[in-house]
Each structure stands twice: as structure tokens, then as C-alpha cells.
Image (tube, rainbow, N blue to C red):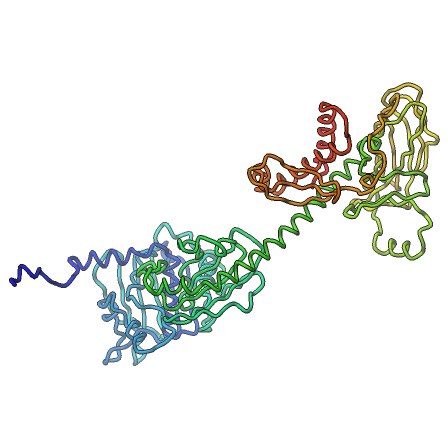
Length: 597
């Protein structure tokens, strides 16, 4: 067969060497990543101390990286081999060392030094030879040449000093604190394992920072499954924390961060990686990275092996996330229930007790010596019994010592009273924390508007005597404690007769406020319903209104509160026409939402 029939064969080569070098130099787009690579070069050189200095000289900003490592390898003549560094781009000495079994070396592409193009205009690297004489290599951005000259020094230099001067305009705001935070995350495990001490001196802002490996928040998860692949072992260090958008798992390779958030990879855009319950590290030392940026992963057989090996870890994290989600839902539900019930109870102290007594929540004051009933989640209880026992009094004196007078309340806050009948009102003084004050108080009652009479003008309790004709009456209470004076008013409505409620007694009237539960019924039109047997309001968590309300805490609270108001009105005013039910719903909603916190 002729040569033409076999086809033409050849080897790939670079057509324009300088253009290729330019492309490589500009492939690193993150200046912080470039600084991290300079520090990693120092760590690879066995440096124990690295100092980063940011300053300004002759109106030009500069960045220095100084280490006490082994420096640039020397030639046979004992001179730092800068020529090899400058003329062996993409032929890394570190890669050869790795192939020979040298561990704990990160570089492998031989292009890290060129990333200075994304930081500044000129690079100067100083290192000493075997005789202690220092030499300097200089490179300039956009120029193909390099210069090596002797650098006289009074003191022998150990390690390497790298200076980038005339920083680019776009990164002149890059301060020491930003560099510190980035390196603490980017080189977290490399710093921990090598023990290197990194210090940042920001002479522009006159601040100094020590780079400490990032500490994750939350609880360290123990007993995670060990991950072993044909390419090597995978290290995971994960922490469980409260759900936050900023929580993420970072992907590392040999102690250096590759991706701040693993969910940028398509295969990890699912639970548990997107649950936002976890922080921490997954370190995969055998991954192949894209040169230049070193924040991209080549999706080869090693990456596939890494993804396939995470099945057990995913199951474990999904189980933990489900348990955490369930616990948070229970906690949120209890908090929501307390807020809703408290808002309703506060409203019922103001609303006419005669109309809102179906659940028997506020209780009825029958005499000055009789206490009212309590509700479990209601902090402010009405206690008027004076002979409750020495032990109870001692506990109250120790745990519930009230502060100075801050506000006063009339119970009930408003009332509907039939003509020619009586109604008892009570004064309650409260401190700033809404604890009841029982000493050093004086009360003064008066009717400032309308008809009616009080049996007395002073004291904790007064009896209102309704007039013989319907009308409105405004009752005023003034409380005094030394120099502090608080006032409040109450509206009394005198009516010809009270409507007899269809439910006056029975098992439901003694149950108090109901609790609630969630039931997902997506596609169903009902929002809530009341279960009489269990005294529970069932809320449809699959309804579009609940989903919309759940995006904000206060909106969700208001929505649940309105559902409570709806069910309470329906059960409390059985048999009334729709227009009156709506009036009661508006009334209850207004007073409850005003007390919602």
C-alpha cells in the first residue's frame, strides 16, 4: 500500500511558543489563588515560616512572599538554577520528584510562577547559592525574556524571597485580612499537616495577621464510612450544623482546596450535598486537575471512581439530614404554637369574655379569693389566691421577683354586660418582663365616659354596676408605684340581653386552646380543619398558600394565626350568620396579630 493510502502521521507541536506561554500565564484568573500557589511553593520547599508583606514603595504597591525553605535548587557550580525555572515551563521538577516517590508536594505543571501576571507587572525572585551569595531573577509581564543578576546582601539569605511590584489596578484593594481568610480555607490541611507558620504583614493598613487553619462550626460527625478506591483512599471531615445557605462541603486535593463548594459539580447538585446542614472537607488526593486555574477537575476514570465510592457516605449523610430536619420542624412547630397561642391569649384578655369563652381560655374570676385557670404555654398567669402555702410563696419569691412598675392591665380588657347586672374587673401591674407585681402598688378606678357605677374607687378589684339602658362606658385605671404612674382604659358595652351560645358546657369547653399539626395534601383546596376529638387544628402544609407563607418566618406565623382565628370563630360562634362570623374573624385577627411576636 502506498504512503498516501496509509495516511499521514506526525507529532503535535506548538506553533507559537510565546503565544502558548501567554495563554498559560493568563489562565489563572484568581489573584488569591496565585498567592496561594506562591505559598504552596514555599511549603513544597520545606519552609517552616512564610511571611507575606503587602506595602507601598515609591507610589507603587508590592507583594512579597518570604520563606525559610530550601530555596531554588542549585547547579553544579552552586548557583541557583533560575535558568531551569525560566526555560522549563510545563516541565515541572516536582512532577519528577513525585514519580520518584517524594510525598507532600503539590505542584506538578511547572506553570505556577507565571500566575504572577494576574497579580502584578514585575516579578523578582531572590535565592542564595551554596556559598551564601544571593542571586535575583527578574521577569516582566508581557515580555518573553528574563534576567539573572547577583544580589549583594550584608546578611546571608535562607530560603526564597519573591516580590511582585506594581500590582494590577483591579487588586489594589486586596488587603491582608482577605488574604488571611482565603489562605486559612484554601491551604487548611496543608498548613495543619506541614506545621508551617504563615504571617501576613499589611503595611498599608498597618495590621498583622496569623493564618490559622479554618475551624468549622457545628458538631464533628463520627463513624463516617471509610472510603477506599482503586486509586487511593479518600479523607472526609464533616460537621453537622444548623441549616444555613452558606454551609457547604469543600473538595480538597492533598490538603489544598480545589472547590469551595462541591455542589458546583453537576453530580453533586442533590441531597445531601445541597441540604446545607454540613460543613467540612472531602479530600481526594488522586484527582486530576485542570492546569492553570487548578479549580477544575478532569472528569476521567479517577473522578468517576471518586463519585461511585460515595454511595455509603451519601446514605449516612441523608439519614443525618433527615433526622436534623425532623428535629428542626418539631422545634419550629413548638415555637410557632407558643407564639400563636400567646397572641390569642393576649387578645382574649382584651376582647369581650362573654363572646370568646367557648374554649374557656381566659377563665372567669368568681371572687377576689379564687384564682383563674392556667394555660400550659402562657407565661403570664393570673394568681389571686393569698393562702397558697409557704412553699409555693417561697419559690415564687425566689424565682419570680418582679421589677418596678412598667405597665398595667385591666382584666378583662373589654366586656359585654347585660343591663342592671354586675361585672367584676381586676387590676394587674406588670414589670418590663411582664411579671406580675403584688407589692407597693395602689390602684384608682374611675368611669370617664358613659353611665354605670363602681362599688369603690380603689383596690385591686372593683365591681361595675350596669345602668338600666344599653350604651358604652369607658373605664379608666391608674396604677402608682412611688413616682411611677401607669394608666389604661377599658370599654364596657351594656346590652339589653346576651345571646345564648349553643355550646355552654361539655367536654370541649374545658380543653383550652387547641394545638396544631401539619398534613400534606397537595392539590387539595382546604387550608385547615378542626379535629374535635383530639382538639387539634390540622393545617394543609401542601397548600400553595402554606408554601408561599413558609418562605418568611413572620408571614408563616401570620398565616397559621389566621387559620387558628378561622377555626376558633367557627367553633365559638356556631349558628351565627356568615356576616357575623366575618365580623368576629376580623376582630379576632386584628387583636391577635397585634400581639404576634
